[in-house]
Amino acid sequence: MAYKQVILIRTDLKMSKGKSCAQCSHAAVEASLQAKKKHRPIFSAWRLSGMKKVVLKVQNQKELYKYAQEAKDVGIPTAIISDAGMTELKPGTTTVCAIGPEKEDKIDLITGRLSTL
Image (tube, rainbow, N blue to C red; front, top):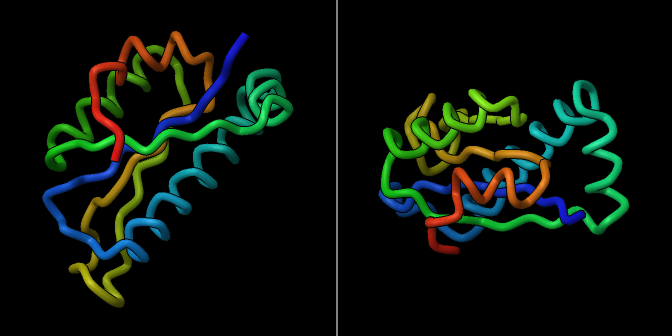
């Protein structure tokens, strides 16, 4: 069985590559910690299979929250990241959301139509 984590990134913010990478990293770690605590068997299977991550594009904050809610509704761990505002963005700007880790087919039902970054 295949597992993965997806990270949704807002394309409307025009973040630098470094900022984007940092925000995605925050989300990946936070969602992983939640999964380790509440969904240990899935977390362990994902970790042992290489911790696959895929970064997908969303157009704006509304779309990001839509997918995050769909994932929460079916019990998939999520982590929404809001920036501290020390560099490029205003404090509190929602930037990314990690969904999973979870079985790939379960995540794909939610995010399967999105494009990769």
